Image 1: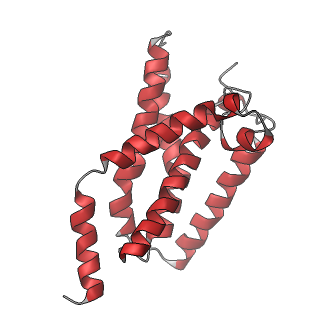
Image 2 (image 1 turned 90 degrees about the vertical axis):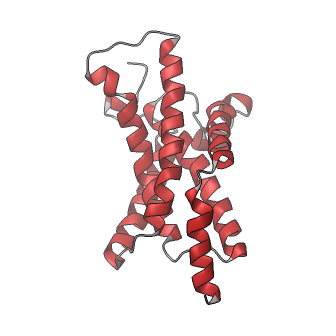
Length: 185
């Protein structure tokens, strides 16, 4: 095999086993981002973390930014090892903009079924939801990096990534008009 073909084959072999350390790092980052503003109350942590209000979008961005950090680390590690695929960035953009919504969809299933979860079980279910979100993001990496993206899809992924940054930043300062995003009804 030539160098590039060997690197691609190596990606498949290396990536088949689930990266448990990365999963644990993602959960740890999620937990840190959940408490970041409480520990360091300032504008930057309000933008990156939960901020002062307990809100749905805040939990979505607590998956978004930690996974963005994991992806940046992956980018440099894969690049250094010669394992970076040409679709890496677009796969990660798709994961970044979609998986937080998937996590919230999972979280709302009991409510949609008329099941009211009381404390402390709600806290346990919330933690489970974050585990599902991080796990889903990591599981989608391999198949989405193997996918070919057309120019229009690449442009849309960049557009929606920018939209995500805008909503996570803007809603850190004021909640959206539509109450779905606010936990404290």
